[in-house]
Length: 349
Image (tube, rainbow, N blue to C red; front, side, top):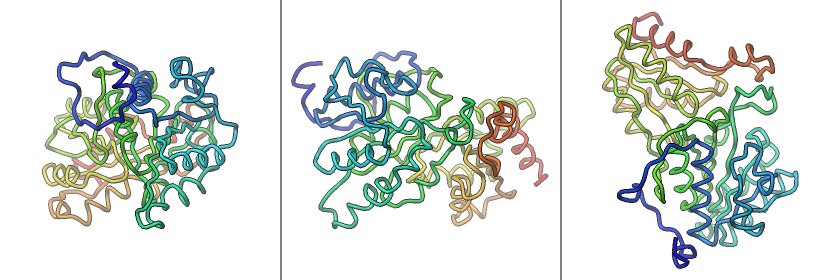
């Protein structure tokens, strides 16, 4: 990249660079590449977080970026989520575009004042005179044996707050594109990265591209039932759809990608076509993302097309257990998704 390009403010593009080379990268590598591109293209971008410097981040996502861009651009913060998030919000108000990493999404509970009462509300409270272009990254979800205080799925909490945008990429391609879109966005964007996805691999184009915030993706077209999922539940839903196909059930799988704002048009069109809906999400079933998707469909014109009750497949009403077997039992697995779809399609609900 030329020196001029390295300092010029970034402009968003919605498609990869024409003719860009596509490689197989891990989810973590795709995020690191997105942050490197953002740092190269825009001098206002800085990274902040606990142990993101020499250590490379709790999940080694930032890697060697501190050596490439220096400690003035890749900054370790003290072990104070409230303080670190406050610095990031303040930096955004002064014109920087900070990307702040929490070690675990659970630790966002310590910073809710800065996220919910400050970042989300200042544009509204000051009549649009300011914006808060901060990106916050949250390693989220269960499956690593980290127990109740390090394994939660709290994206629905943030989706409840006007002023925040909330995304959950399921693939390396979307992890890179959504992060770059978030950096360009004038408002706070919360990115929930499922920890089990960090090592998964997929095709990722070189160079700069964005995935639009607020657009779902139809991962697998189908005619019999719509399965709506996000994050790690997307590959599980796709695996379930493969199993269901052997039973003659053709499931359409939709990756939400964005929790707030939801892509109403894609969801309504799919349910109107398939006439059945199963919502899958890792967070606790009560008041979760699937509840909002269900309400959206129930309040829309798609409701008249439904041939069966809407079914939610969510997490159990318990803190995430430490025991590996109990941990699996507490969140939806492929078999749970397939069983729920069979009930819906066969009229057993």
